[in-house]
Image (tube, rainbow, N blue to C red; front, side, top):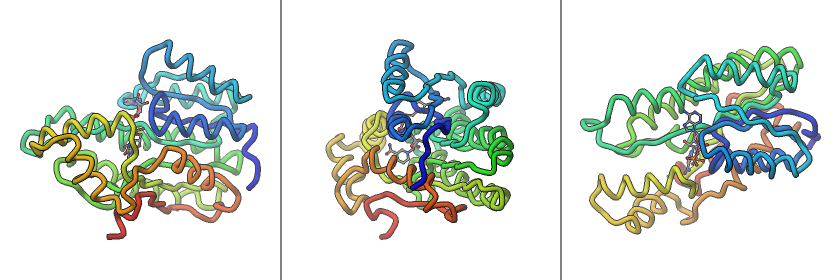
Length: 261
Ligand code: NAD
């Protein structure tokens, strides 16, 4: 595995959950990090300091992934501070669980914007710099829901299927430029996003939270174990290695066998 030391990664939605774990794992491999996402100022400062303790630079950018102008500023900041992002991980995401008849249109719009359209905006901004350098890695954090559906998640499933289409298309467009574009499709990971979903699913299905974990979530996951943030980080680091230079336009499932069934 060639060293990633000295490279720079933008990781959207990295103030929590999978994104934060990715930021820590890439920092441990010598990658400067631009973190992004919402949260309390003090918590974000503490996260940034912990990343810097690993011997890299860490910068926080507050771009709201529903706002293309703020995303453009995030990309511009990466260019001005680090000469552009070598690695872009589109990870920011939200969820809303509800039957389609009751699905609030504003939640639909927000999920499509954050979970799908934001990646169009980050990629179109970051790609020219990667092409110029002749090296780049774009990883879109999709989901098992990019491949299969579950009821009550119309916007999320739509956005995650869409992101796989974007992954394939951009991969072809930059295939000869040293830039790979791939998607990671995790099953369930125990993060704040899933914790909220457990509560919402319990409500919409009229069952207890324990029943949601055992009969909905871990039922789909044949290993009967949540995927861990560290396992996703290991896969993302592999996709950034030389060994993965010919993997592009692909999705990598990490879902405990969910989509094999
Ligand atoms: P999380 O809720 O822990 O983290 C989401 C991050 O996105 C946070 O940092 C939040 O501040 C940020 N965010 C939300 N709205 C934003 C906006 N408008 N602009 C910028 N940042 C915003 O969730 P997570 O579970 O770590 O999810 C991360 C990604 O992984 C998402 O794309 C999610 O769909 C995907 N995923 C999660 C699971 C899972 O089981 N947790 C499974 C498959 C895929």
